[in-house]
Image 1: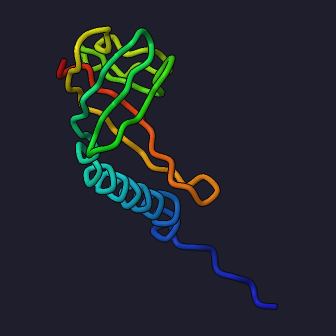
Image 2: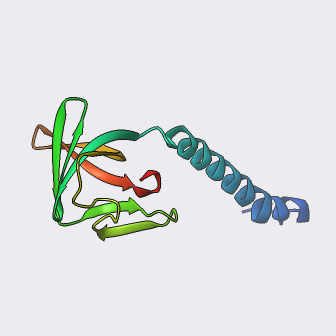
Length: 122
């Protein structure tokens, strides 16, 4: 068995710093481009009618009901709130509010729900 040569100092620097740094830059770039491609593309204006803490959202000829709380909503300051009732959804006449809808497959059936509401526009 022949003795193996120790890696050169330059090779050691490349392996310890340059390769991980390159991987982080590539991962950051990929995440950035994916995020940028989805930014502001999923918001749609829905008509909403509120009755207490229940709301009916109408969008593209379909209606979607939410009762109790929403997974996420953006308040008037731009802060994301979670698992609560949006402050802009009050018992008033029908109004328009930006929403994000998501469709999920549940045992072969497409189920569409309201995922988020943007109260900044209200």
